[in-house]
Image (cartoon, rainbow over all chains, first blue to last red; front, top):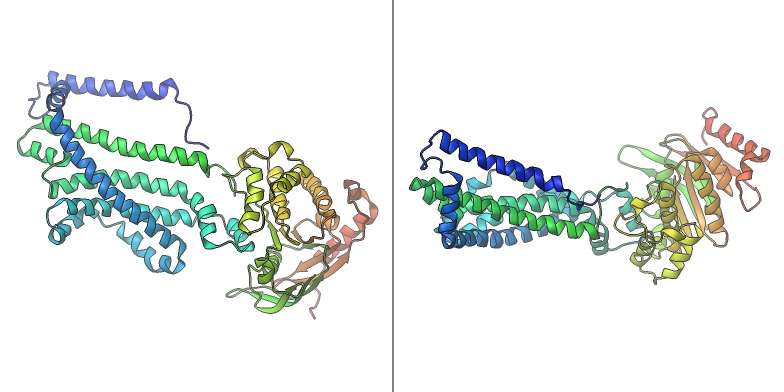
Length: 259
Length: 250
């Protein structure tokens, strides 16, 4: 049941081998086909670009991280709170849930220009945008998770006249945790996407901005270098959620049991 | 005692039970047997105060089920054990009592689990328990509430027959020194006859009382009773009531 199982050597070996093969193919391709480096720089050129300008990448990565952290925190806080509301207050659920589901089909990116008009081209716009894209998946998954408590448990709690707070904290929320974390994983992934999109639209700093800058100057080495840093940033956030989930899962092992 | 008077429970378009009258004495073990869909569970929910009767009334020592529930007098056991997967056997037993606002009694909970043969499993999680063991924990949880009304909805329904028989013996033993009134719903006629002081046959749609049997076998109830000819006669009687041509209702 537990997500934490011992890593076998193959768990790391095979992906590492695939990675090495991928890099080697890229190398071969850029040499064998003599692709001009402004179109496809070789891996060593990208590495040199990264190593040669550590400050530039660090500063811009930090700017992106900042948007993810602030926007993500706001979005997650509100998303979870709203999810609790929708999941526990039947009236709120009936009134709002259809819209929460409907909004999922709307590409949040399309809202960006509107925010630009309302909030200008500053940091706030980026944070609000990131918050917005992280908000929705968490609301829906939290609310769905809270609906997952087995009916028998609720009858049992009602039979001892349990209060709503006890019911929520002791039973419903723990049962909702797997869904909450599924939502969180979506949220942090989208937070990074949101930060990059925001940087394309409003920012003067950040990895997204760097990519845009690289494109305007046909510097594919900068673009690919920024992309690789972005992968690391994204994986770090995702990894944080996974670690949290493992810790919580040890305390509240919900999966793999019972009615 | 529990008095059920002219109880009818209707949902939007369906009437689950209708015209049910039953008096259950304090400390009595009443088994309720009947086919699926005869409203056994609904009746149990009504006594538990989880379902308001559409008509008629239910009194537990003269109080409404809601009052009895608020006082923590009602214990429930279902077919599913409904143990919290993240709590140990002991944790599951004490947890409900705490939620019910009663003073904690961990040594009592331990003793209870030991008395149902789980002394080695106090700290085991539900996933580590067999179905029978999990159901023993669920029973211990209900008894630990110090509820004087125990409502059991096919508690052994998901277990194999041998485990069922064992649990039946244990349950009677466990309740022997307590003044617990039990309403025990089952699909199994032998189980109903083996366990009950009385057995009521619920039938029809909406469900109504078809017959009531006194089961005055000596205590303690041992598995040897299953081969007793008086027992088998009783089983046949209950079966006959269960499968008889629909009798005209009063």
